[in-house]
Image 1 (cartoon, helix red, strand yellow):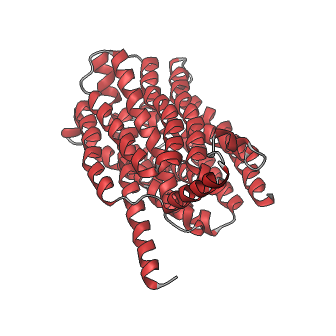
Image 2: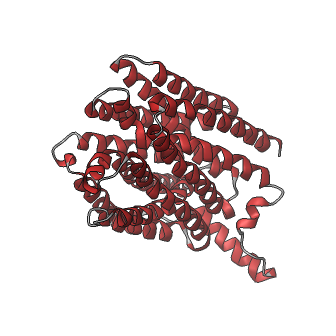
Image 3: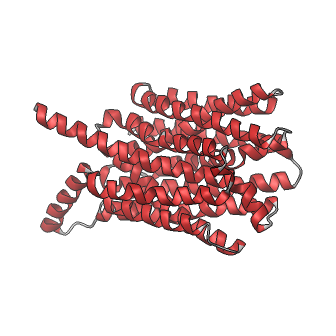
Length: 408
């Protein structure tokens, strides 16, 4: 490879990961927005804890069809086009959140905003992983996905200002920012070279023998069946815990007797450490044996959950929040990196998209179940304890996936 080609490849990778990082920042703003705006929305619409859990889950439910459709279309017509359209859909319906006047219409616009965001996420993962060599995919996805906790941490800081005290301003911000980034994507974002190569190869093959394009069924062929099932289970239970923490952490702190401001501060620590954890775990995915990374990240999540249950003082709670954040969000980044490693180029968008959709089912159920547990009187300790078996199951299936990859 000559120097000019190498420089071109590096520039392609940097621009792709940087723009995907910006979209991930916007995702982090949106995910955090529901939790931060919850008190204002509860008061504005007169909601109880159970209805608030449904509100949290509505946006997450939208992620499911979005992930299914987004990944599939990205494999057919291109990563860049689908990412731009999905970002526009998300932005439009996020803005609509401030204009609705009933609980039902609130749920509808959150669902549709979630659909746009859900379509974007598997494409971000696919673009970031395909912009670099296979040896650097974990690092690229980690650097891209750390934008999510960065966005959430930024919104936590904004929430402590006068501007952030009005819940509508939070959704104005989340809806307008994507419209600034969309022109950047149209102008600067390159299409995935791996996609263009696969598309060209597919045209050549089709011209020769009319071979069909890859489809959902390819996720269940002899090569991919067990990989698909293992990664689905891990995504489902891990994202269930991730979204319980993202949606309910400030409220869980208040259940434990701390103030709303202290809960927001805990969320900030959670997100700052999540940023560091996502980058470090992504780098370790490329450098360590995959089984060691899995044991480290799931062991870290369990340690953080036990620390949250055992902590007594405010500082101990902050430290426990930071520990959970570093590993639970970092773990999600590693799972996304694994999705890009597990599947070949022609079904990578579809495979990651479907796995994300399965994970979103867990993400949707998690906050709703937490709301029911709190309403039934189990308290914050009950919610945290319920998350522990989910993490153990996820770890077991990820280890089985690694073994499957190494033996095939």
